Image 1 (tube, rainbow, N blue to C red):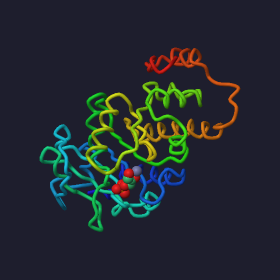
Image 2: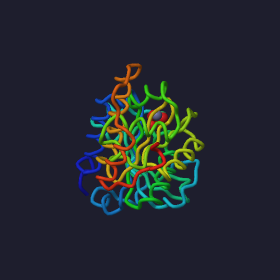
Image 3: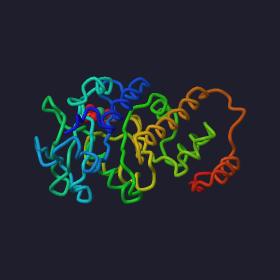
Image 4: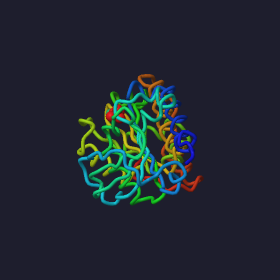
Length: 270
Ligand code: 13P
Ligand code: ZN
């Protein structure tokens, strides 16, 4: 067996969590990530028959039965992931129709997966139904996106349209827009189901006055999505309350989307 700490997936998880921490998206234990892995990717590093612990999940995820995930642990600090991956991360396989997570590696202090595991797994199910190549769900608390939540209406159309207006690249990077949920209690199946419902339409879901969920094919792509939304929100915050004398007009957004050949939410423009 090769050393799992040198595997591409652990190395990338350490690198991404460190960057997210430094960008101020993941204070303390804020945020969580789940990455879908193939058995073939794991085989050089793990005996997938050796189950360390069986942990109940509290929800059903029948379409994820037998799938493997690398998941950040609950209460673990993103700042510490790179220094202590075996304690802050875990690799699980879903069994019993998703009601059990079989721990194969990690959570070495006896811990378990993130409290947002329902939102992650339900989002994976929703995104995989739309895009079979989806592998990542990433949650964090980016400062400007969060600040924007307090001074901007929380609905899909107006939130998306404002973000699109803030940076030219936005409509190209997330042409489907962003879904927005009202403030809700986190860490339970209800917010998981609400997030997954939005994930049928969007790769980005804002949790009102809490943070953001993004999904994608790779860690890099998903990180880039958070980064783009957060940059647009930063421009919004930097210009908020000031007279706006220029904007990217709807006809220009339309021209941009057409020039780049992206399928965008036409009904989000006037
Ligand atoms: P966990 O530490 O359980 O991952 O929770 C962090 C968080 O961001 C809750 O929404
Ligand atoms: Zn959170």
